[in-house]
Length: 136
Image (cartoon, rainbow, N blue to C red; front, side, top):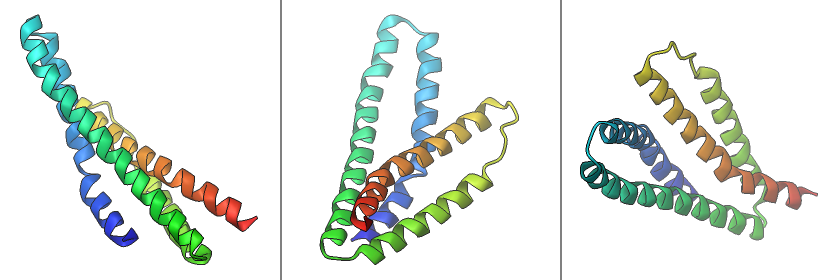
């Protein structure tokens, strides 16, 4: 189930860039429209953003449940190995980030990538704490 969740998360992560782009476009559109038109844009966008946040939250919760189950089953070494692989992969991802050259679109894409990484780090924070407690 952990592998399935990881695969699902890999499929979801690229959509972060699209969600950020849609939010940026909506912000630009509402800046130059009437109040009624702005509201017609903001209302469905708010629904999309709530659903997106709920999805991210649910993925984090599920990951924590699965990792806690592993620890309860005495799978400390497996959980530790999973965390170390993730740390290595995240380190490589951070090393591959390129400086932003001032282009707005490139900047938005890099910000979205950083949000994906931030969400991923937050998702693993509980796991690291649990492993730390179990290892003491």
